[in-house]
Length: 295
Ligand SMILES: [Zn+2]
Image (cartoon, rainbow, N blue to C red; front, side):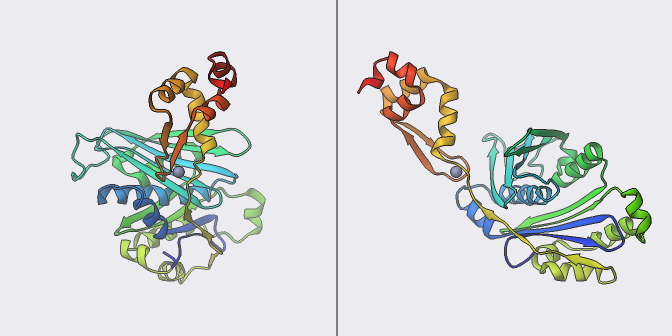
């Protein structure tokens, strides 16, 4: 990975293969310190965060991309979100009654849900089975089934460092292909070379060193990186939306009992509280009818 948390694309001359490298360290530290997950769970969450960052570069939208893993294992849920500008956040949920020190944290059955929510436009969701408890295998399956694109991902997370390598074969564009001198065997060769990269090299070499290590005989171009950071998009306004869904009666009950509604963001731990006047503002008609809005 690079010295800083970054997403970097690369391409090969004379082939329709695109690549990306992602590395996370500070982002993970910022996420881990807000939670207290066992290390194996941290590592899985790190993997999913890298996967989300890698995928975000393949969708050209302004908005949110999220990956959610739901399983019957000790880790019930993993959620990683990224915005187009490289802001990441994530959480894990564990089954208190199961042992998280066991090997198959993701159980025997599960699914991976990919959600893309453009700031403007329609929400997209894709669901695939969790293949062999592996996030990378499941995503490769997703690209094969849904996009008909051959894709390989290598992701490792250990000791607070997560890194990923992504290769994808893009469809040839008819006329452009004829005009270009295309290397037909490139996809197989580039993948075989990528297979030789060891996890410690992926996590600890600089990105240009990784590409040199793998592809010094290829014509590869590494582009400027997109910085990645932890950033939570929570706000009092967003939590207000959740309160309006709970409804006036329940909100007013909590205020009557506890004088405040307290809510903590599950991603960053930020505390929010809502008073009677907040509830009046959210439900003007109901609170006026109930005499609570007249103070
Ligand atoms: Zn938050």
